[in-house]
Image (cartoon, rainbow, N blue to C red; front, side, top):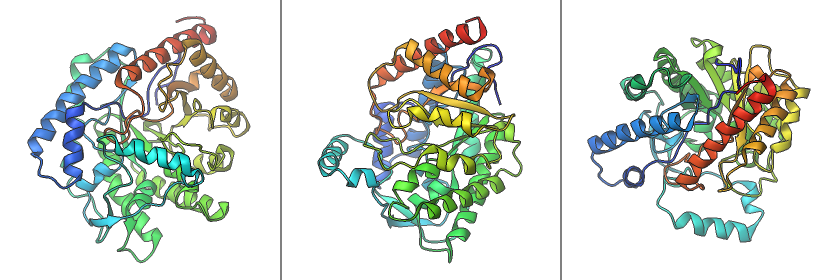
Length: 391
């Protein structure tokens, strides 16, 4: 796991804006229209090459493929797992239901854009869930490797993402397994194929686990807190089983409360879930500290410390507004986290979440995305001068 040994390193959470033409292809495929597989593959490969170069030009240190070859941070697996079919319905977040006027406005805005969502046309588990063909993830790794090869020495480390079995279990409803635990175990065994392949390819693995916070106000919105915390513990245990063959220093775990602009006043506090998250056998965590609902929670890191060998990627850029954060604001946020952790070498600067977690759903204009990321790299330089005495 890369540390900020002599300056604050920069990274992000995974998804970056996809080209409009590629998004259009993904939307058509999700709708069941006939789309040429070679056309999508070629467009995805070209998008990966472009996004890698753009990250390096922006000054990012730990980079990825921008999830360009996926339609969604999680539902791309509908094309890689067996046993999925039909359609299922996902509960709406409690904070959206609580504000009818906002709910209507949100629906109108969503209907006005061409995008893949994590709410519509969702599959369900109708048979045994397995990973269909390891060559699928191996190809994705190969495309990324080819894109970064000519740029060796211009970045610090590469990473790829893969979803938590818990977010799959809550989005893709179970109609096959006799118990939720059996369903979760099957999903864990399936995504283990991706976890292992990404690390074997020489990349850091980021686990995307919004379920470990988001589901408190979604699946568990009308249930006691204890039931949700039990769910978190069961998912973390499943993740640990799936990571059995992966060194913890090769894995960072991302948790958020849902990458959507809304009141978020039903969110579970970080303090409630962090003790369970720390049981995950990973080398670090990616947490949001820029958005208005959770910006104060960096203090929890001082009260409930990470293990000595773990790092924190602190979200210092909001991925849901078109404000371009001032670099001094970014630096202040980095310094506050470093003070709470007690060691700036264990802090990286990052984004709260992805900028395009489902193709076309991003709230931030593409040119503003890159301005925000540039502001983050400048803010990291400012913080580095203050924390390390150098740029």
